[in-house]
Image: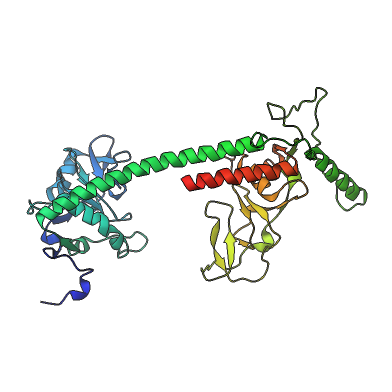
Length: 415
């Protein structure tokens, strides 16, 4: 006899009791060998086939009936048994609900051979709860696993039979409601995404706010920029861009570019190259990727993760703000108004020509612009910067931004 007080994870109510799993269920596992696979036969269930909510047969492999019979001599699976992933992905307890012949490999099997009064659903819900703790205590190296002995000796709290049924009933009802909420949430997320896309579409087409005839047309701003560039070229300070084009109206006063309709009054067709000057991020690449939350300077990527971590490096921190960072391969972009360093050179830092465009408006223009980027190549110089867009006057940009941020704040409240 030994004291196991330090093993008991928490106190249980009066009438409950602690025991090891192998005291209440027959804990086995499937074969550890790799049988010969066949095109048609008996499904061989492995860890990858166990998913949240059940068994996934979509990518199952098959074995011969002879091999299945051999495996099932020690680990035959019946309705009501529980399967549990032991290797790689740990957990995903799944109850067998179909009366079909299957075999298992590297999967734990919980059979209720000598516990007819024990609720198998209660045990499944307990395993669902305990799997997070088990994931923190795995054996193995590159591929974590839990051993059969670990599972057999795992402590489980057992309530009285009647209370087990009440717990199972409440859990089943709650989980069903949560799943319904998840479905509604996914539908809402899709609707929110569509709403944001539609609002951006209206904004860049000049249909979100009314035009003001007193605004100075954007074409006047572009003429100012062209005049300044011509003077710099004349002075020899910059070279003429042979690819630069001037977009103008035809004789019928209509545009013949990618827009299928006339632009609103005061708007002009231009491209991202005119609005955004790119800079290579080489000088700002972090040297040490040992990030810590207590460090001060964020390290950025233009991808979904955005902030990869924080560095304590003090040199070559980017500070000419605000800017847009652009992933040169995926074309994702992020608006940045704080100092930063970067992880790699796979991006462009885009400086915003504030004489022509408001910083946040330029960012929303990019969010509304999608191009084909299936090939693994850099896109800013060759493609994205040449994308044509409609640019409103500065004052109208302000009104559009105000409307956009109002609608986006409402959407955020909903989502």
